[in-house]
Length: 157
Image (cartoon, rainbow, N blue to C red; front, top):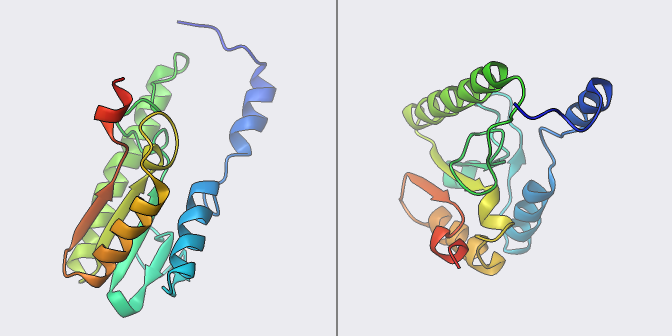
């Protein structure tokens, strides 16, 4: 087990500073969709999971998920070396909650899209205009589910 390079107090401060909403990836998506003419509500508490963007006109909910916090199997996610049991329970709970919230939204007639952080940054990132176009086309379609993640083939260089 590798030792942490910062004090427990510093690590606590760092972790407390991580935002749960209005993150940079979320702001990028919001701004681009707004420029494309889509109007939405933010973090609607009446819906399961408080989706990052809710587009009632399209009966669509969009989540922008960080790969670490949502346990996405990509190059941006790595299990922490310290407090392994805590992190496995924490991230495992997030994954289970995400799955339940998606099912609840679908059961209530909502369409759900997830944009993963690895699609927006890192070596597997996609071209941002392509992400916006994919979201725009999905919103105008009848497709129920969309997941946008990084291009693993691109990262294998």
